[in-house]
Amino acid sequence: MPYTVDFENVSTVGLESSPVAEAAAGLRANEARYFRNKYKHVFTVSPAQEVPAVVERVSRILREERDIVIESRPLEATAFQVEDLHMAYVFYESGLSINVMYSLEDGKRAVGFKLADGMDIPAELEAKFKFARQKSKLAGVIRGSYFVIKGEYPPAPTQPQG
Image (cartoon, rainbow, N blue to C red; front, side, top):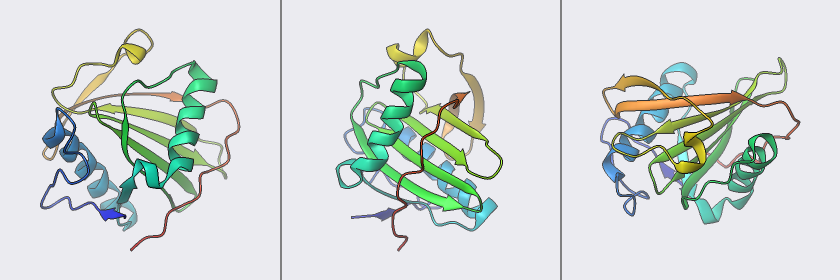
């Protein structure tokens, strides 16, 4: 069942099994606030098992582009479109958030990684990326990195917004 992320009253709903659940919830709320303020989009997530196409597309891009397999269990995922951007997010039990930004019009395509405050850099990412720090009122210190997608990966189906 989809869950609308509230960035004013941050909740760990759906992320309770994460050892950094509160920080992961803050990270998720930070993303929700960004999309609400920039695009007037209501950020909704579903349990990962309810949106397997989204999780598989993100996993496929990581595997084919950089030979990366995320060891942590996916907890939630979402896919949606704002303007010409197709977005996909997967939130993992470790506190890792991965997003895929895929523009059909201008060819801008990238994968972004964000680490919830308090989590270690996953071993599968540690040697491949450097992580920059940014502060967030909702998420504490976020460490992030990204890479540009070179291949073609048609956008995942978007989920209904409620």
